[in-house]
Image: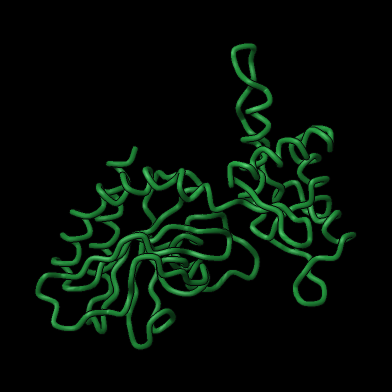
Length: 259
């Protein structure tokens, strides 16, 4: 996703207003595929469309951009945003840009809890089989990933300094690169992203933790806005292909359980 930047990395008003219009149709967020009928609330539908729209713009959008993106009058968009703000589902920054709010984390917690419950035995088995730290990582935004769960092998003598809640750039480390590899190719992407798309898993060394080898595969079958990866971190390995196969098998197993 391309963002228009000005001094200090903050879009000025004209740039912000033109941000959506400058995006090609290919990169514009898709309108909701849900068709509203007489048994549904159109107001609630538009509110949910706003949240879906904001997931594509982590740097935020103006009220006018949101109104245009959802297809409602600016006054209607303003009322919807105020309601979402009251429930902490979105917020306005000092530049009047609207972004997703922390209340969504609370709503997502039960879903992530289910994911952790299903993932734990798979991660434990992977950690034991590879004698490596196993981890489950979710995409936090277009630019970041967050570690949701970390499991050490029971026999571990040395622990990798990787912990749940840790946030890293999506373009650094095997977890983020495996997630990028699950998306359509983009111009200028890293060679490892292209390679991971072909082989089925990403490999990096020392990008998140010095001297640590990371191998991760995306969990298949998840929605684009809920992409996550499963992987391992180890200090050394003589057979990356064998470890990659273990990681892909574990990711496939978890993916089949989530469908």
